[in-house]
Image (cartoon, rainbow, N blue to C red; front, side, top):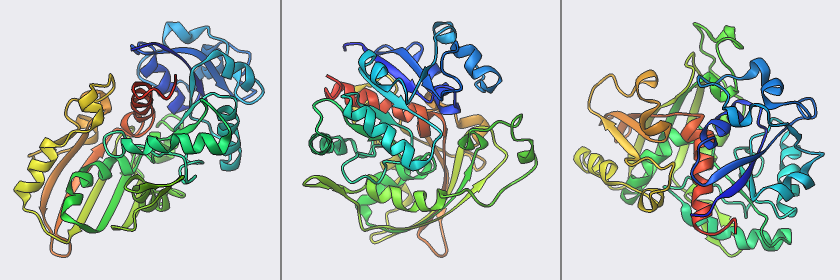
Length: 359
């Protein structure tokens, strides 16, 4: 596989920090540019991020002294230095949309962690094991943008990556209705216990915009390409509640599901164990060998024990049993800043690279 020079837009934020750690020793992708807001621009990365560095691992030596560029003012120069960029900025939605489109029009592909373009009809929102075929919409997007190389591809919300992967292999039984309650780590808000002491011994039963994303985004992931747009699926009916809990990393979901053709527990467990996607077939560098992992113990999965399974890129499930109102209920867990954010973005970029979209 050829090597690519990459930029990280929003490099000082928590997801940007994850991108740095994941890419520091990546076999295909080399960090060439770090960019952030004007207040960070012009400073060495270690100075720009300062006390905001919130990862367990230290800042990689390869980027410590890299001078941070201005994500907006320097975009022409950045686009000329890299093959594509990862974008994880903290800005207003319309500003993010404009910024990502500006990079794409500069012939610089954008792999985005942001939500701004998730429902742009010709922007693929990809969980690589579930809907890799959605990248086929990119030529239509390029036609709209008037670009030869430039495009935007986004990853989905971190919360749906805990439970949608577990539901996906079961769609053949006709999923009618889903209730999912997610219990989301504070890193999903870009926080640590040091920066958010109010979350210690606390639970907040509301995360702005999260329930709407959790109910709507799976339907785009399960949608289909028609002409020059992705048409969202019209089922199943999904309802969610999203709570912020005092956990550093790891989003847990309690899932209830009703089928048109109810499978047996044995069938579900077999489907989970045997499921593999394109990333596993292609042996992409960031892909977990076993995507879906079921724990027999009644007290698993646990965030502290299981979030880092396969480098934080696998999904953990447990407590599958029949329900009195739905057909079945179970529990899921994913690492929200790895599989749910930066790791999912890197995996999507690996898929795009293999398919030639950065060439």
